[in-house]
Image (cartoon, rainbow, N blue to C red):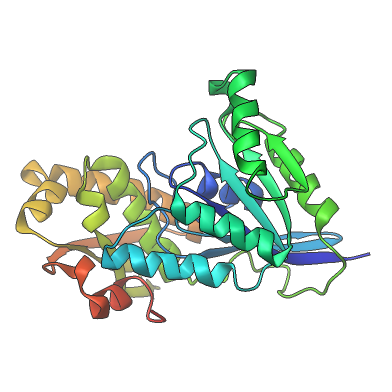
Length: 297
């Protein structure tokens, strides 16, 4: 029997959704940062096994906001919940449920779809805290399986979650070829790698006003490397100066970290050419959000 299906990964910001996706796929698909809201759009990762194919949809962290950018991000979550076979709901030691997450838990219950609750970071909790979180979530949705894991410290976390998914998925077709691990383009993944390095190197609110676009990607045979030119979009001149850093030190460090990871991803040498551009209030302008995040919205 060959099993397949679409698995929507849902939860509040910073609970470990992107970490889980990368762990299951075994490749860097979604960016990981200690800062919340790392993922801005739904990223599809594909896991192929001998008798299964699982298409994971990693959604932006759920939170209530009237900001234009966050409204666009919420559309991705709505899209992911339109057609899925299994919901994988993640929470952590905080166990928070706000109005938006409550709404999506109600949708999962209403659709009567199979679902798994993954309680992450259990190494930071007591048994009493874990039971309180279980009670809070199970009172709002019917979960087929509840898993207690620590994605960072539990060596069996991947196997536990994968086995639970496969147990619940039904027989289905192969949607993608075996060598495809994501529906995202190379340019998108490269832009996300760069944005991750910015998030991990720049403090406070600046990362949430940053977008990255890959403007040019060309293989240069004479030098046996890829030339990649990318724009880092910011809203203010002050943000630009912070990202560049004193004597250009920070932008060089961001470029170095990004280049090393992009080379590992492309399996070839890379020349990374980064430019910082100012587009005032881009996070409040829907045409610019469409241009920098995804043209569908």
